Length: 328
Image: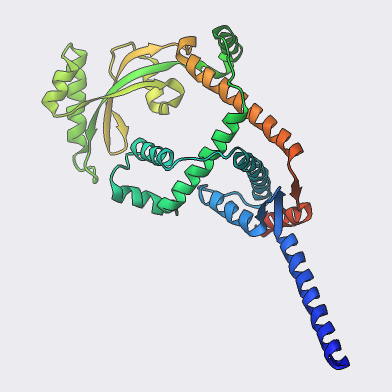
């Protein structure tokens, strides 16, 4: 090889080395998180952030968006750690498990019709494959966490103690009234208002004189509608004022309301009270179990952080978060 060829060759090798070094730097800069050999790039996280934001009716902006993204980032890092643990344990989710989960979703949301199901997916910006991947991902995370934690046992006495401690704040039931109504529709142009008002007043007078409400409603071609038990504080001001002076089984004079006239019967008054322990026992048990499960899962993740190689590009993370905050 002559001297000129050698120089050209050396220059070529040097340029290739520089290009390779630059490529290495680009890859390192693009990696936001590494958990052992599992990585998440800036693009990966930004795509995940967009997916999560698309599920929120009113996505946050400015500093709230920055806070949301930071919380999501922490969650994604924890997911990566659990996924690494799942790989170690060779945990998998069978297709049948995913199929069952999707079938339950469709049943709970009345989406048994394929066309309705497809429409719901499209409105959420998802495909069936996207949904399956999301379920498989979340189920694998849950199974991994469950394989690391110990079920929490809690006695009925402990549940009762929690109930008593939280009773005043969480289980108070406000004063309520149980109501039913008759609704007399009025034409949109109110041309028949006087006639309808006369009919309603006549019905009220006959019922107050001893006539049966349901019989009168049937003769008038009007249905007696059950309104159920309603907190007094949720009543319309005019209706609340009227009911305040009534006895049980009394009915109101016709009241103006949207689209017509309303006659209301007070069935029962219910004073302020508390939900009973028996009514909320199962809910408290689930809440305590979930709290213990989440606490243990956080402990598992913290322990695995000490066992795994976890590297976060803090500089790129802060730059990204600041860009989000300043974008609004």
